[in-house]
Image: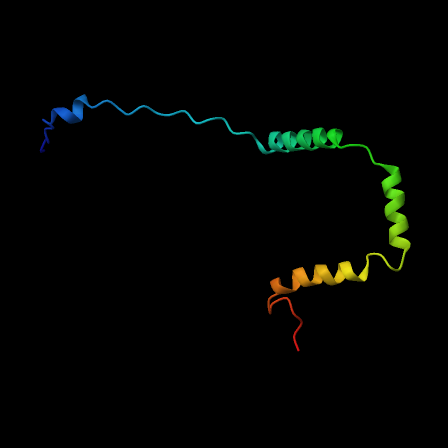
Length: 91
C-alpha cells in the first residue's frame, strides 16, 4: 500500500472564505399579498369621479361632429409617418 504524504503547509493552514448570507426572499403568496395591498392603497388614493365631466363627455360622444374632422386629420398626420409595412393590410 502506498501512502501519499501531503507536506504542503498552505493546504493545511488555509482558512475558508466567509459565506455571505443571502437576503430573504418573499414567497409567492407574500408577493401576491404585497402587490394586492399596493393596488388597494393606489385605489384608495384615486380621486373621486367628477360627475359633471362624465356628463360632458357623454354629451360630446353623442354629437356627430365630435371629434372635429380637423383634429382627426392632424392626429392621422402625426401617426402616419410611424406606420411601417407590417401594419398595412396585404394587397
